[in-house]
Length: 301
Image (cartoon, rainbow, N blue to C red):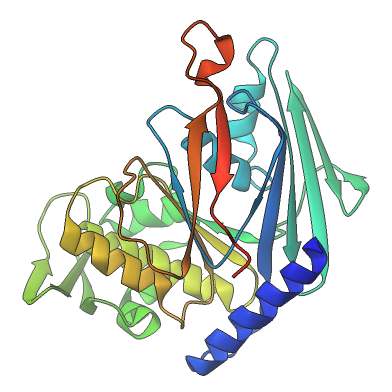
């Protein structure tokens, strides 16, 4: 049943992309099985749709969950967690490219093990592409050299990406240029035209989001791609939140999104699948009280 659902998701998203005028090689990150982690109350499987929102309190495990998704290519985060006393991290990720694949990793102490489609390997070679920033996405640097270092691109590739951003994303950013190695842009938010050409080191959030979307779109032309946005809905700016939701929900997007938020009262687009982080127990005497369960909304639609 899980395999059939995965193929259905792949097929339906391909159709939506083709209707949006997008034709490209395509893959799909289908699910993650979390078998053991320091924040998790019980083994859990999470299925992914095209747009995924994870809601929960601070310090309940959302950032740990994000680190699991990038654990195959960047295991440092899970190794830091697995190095704690009596701790282990064990998970498996299933994806289509377009054939079904499975990669499993287990970390305990200083030991790290990988399996790919049942075979032991020293590491997993780029099963799918992760797009995120080592620091918070809203701190996206304006300098092309620093941005290239953060996202793993040569600064000349960054310049090319920025120059083509409006045509790649088709979002709020209408004009981009680079002056003395600093990224500049003009974008529309609501009925206002905003110029982001200041001397401060960080780009405006609207521009930063579209830089990451442009990067994800470019990678998605050749491989399954997952955009990770931790704490995306935290500023309480309704206009910005509406813009981001529509941007990521667009039928022309060729990648999948996983976003997290501490807010529980968000206007949810029907394209989004919502998963809630909830405490395992309300009993203050219970040591499991601070462990989390994941409760996923119906994803059979």
